[in-house]
Amino acid sequence: MQHDIKTAVVYQIYPKSFYSHHGNATGDLAGVIDKLDYLAWLGVDYLWLTPFFQSPQQDNGYDISDYYAIDPAYGTMADLERLIAEAKSRGIGLMLDIVVNHTSTAHAWFRQARQGRDNPYRDFYIWRDTPNNWQSKFGGSAWEFDADSGQYYLHLFDKTQADLNWANPAVRQAVYAMMRFWADKGVAGFRLDVINLISKPGDFPEDHSDGRRFYTDGPRIHDYLQEMHREVFAGRDLLTVGEMSSTSMTHCIDYTQPTRRELSMVFNFHHLKVDYPNGEKWVAAPFDFIELKRILSAWQVGMVSGGGWNATFWCNHDQPRVVSRFGDDGRYRVESAKMLASVLHGLRGTPYIYQGEEIAMANPGFTRIDDYRDVESLNAWHALRAQGVAAEAVLAAIRQKSRDNARTPMQWDNGPHAGFSRVAPWIDVAPDADRVNVAAALADPGSVLHHYRQLIALRKRHPIFADGDYRCLTPEHPAIWAYLRASEAARLLVIANFRAEPQDFDPPLAPLPVGWRWRLLSANLPASPDQPGPLRLRPYEALIYLAER
Ligand code: GLC
Figure 1 (cartoon, rainbow, N blue to C red):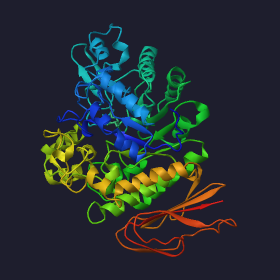
Figure 2 (cartoon, rainbow, N blue to C red):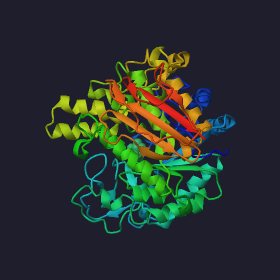
Figure 3 (cartoon, helix red, strand yellow):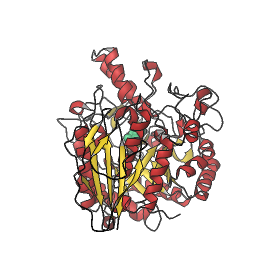
Figure 4 (cartoon, rainbow, N blue to C red):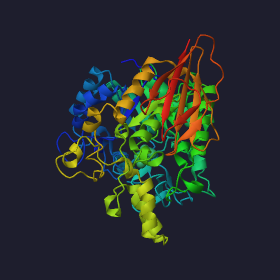
């Protein structure tokens, strides 16, 4: 299967919450096969599935205990092989989620390693007699004492997720062998979990902060990725996307600049911290719109001039729902969800759609801590309550920020459990499922779903989406984001109102070359002007204009 990664669109599936073929409380791989016709209709090129490997599920599969086995809750190897083949027959490639910063402490390597200091697997992990002051990203110290062997091991995430020692060549070879195994099975790409954290400095210095500056984009990260490219990617047609935590643009250019032979593209998260006041996640807060534009615009311009490539996204399984976050999930749910889709899909980069985003699923608004399942949210609850923060304040923050906002079951129809399962699902269905669901969206030509489908088709039809450069026209405007994409052959103009109030706006445009003319390519409201003159934008209106040679 050959896809141009620059015109491709990727759809992310969180299998636990996507669809249960067997009717169980959790989704499964056979459920993904059941929905392939829907995904092919939508027009996506790749499916990225979050981990379905054998796992104690402490972090919903990001704690892998066997990289070669399918967790029975998700099905069998035969199901996966059928999924790969069925997807391929519809022109869709399957991407696996590779979690190799850490393994579960239930992995055979770790069980060996903790047998003693001279066990051959000891050096697969990172051990110290005394911990430094680094913090886990899920709260508390990043070190856990192993009483049996008398040392501390490093875990940047949960204490059941022990960090692998990438300085050990045997670890790297074991990882590459595993990745080749999956590539040989016919997968079309890899999403690499927190891959820029794998290279730790040898001396583990104390920090005035949580330690991330020492291991983020760490000392040997580019050597490791180039080695991975030689050992796994070279000679294969794979889309590779790295999840880059707290990264920098300089590194991201290096990760994706094709001649360096590292990765196809990267995710960064700077634009999703615009509602973290002073960097603090667990506070309910509005988002900073100017900052959102500033950050995304800087990455659009900077990555392009450096020859790099962005993965563009609003949502994933770790983020709240975008319509609740940067749009309006009440009165203007449909308008604002379409507006956000237009803005994202007009950017330069490869767009990712997270399951349910295409029907504008919203944060579920759970009211009790017992409704939440995510280890990060529950850790935050306990830590903040122990510090004396009022229960209502913590819940308000969790309601806005929890990763579970993205993890409620996919809403397929207005039947029991939103058509996701036959029994009560592992986490509650959001309360709006009777109105917001795939069946209703398919039947309504004006739905958010149909808008996503049109945007995907436009990207395939017009090269400007992939190859135009980017310029923000409204960096300081409090309500409007307008930007221009330009190539030798075309111009693309995206204009979006991020507010519920109408806005008067005259886009500052240079005259088009002689003989070129604007035409309206996409709109989220009826009766939009066919030329970008002085405009009166309605609430959450989004317009895309095209001019071609
Ligand atoms: C990534 C995943 C997240 C997981 C973490 C640790 O950020 O997206 O879900 O908890 O890595 O593996």
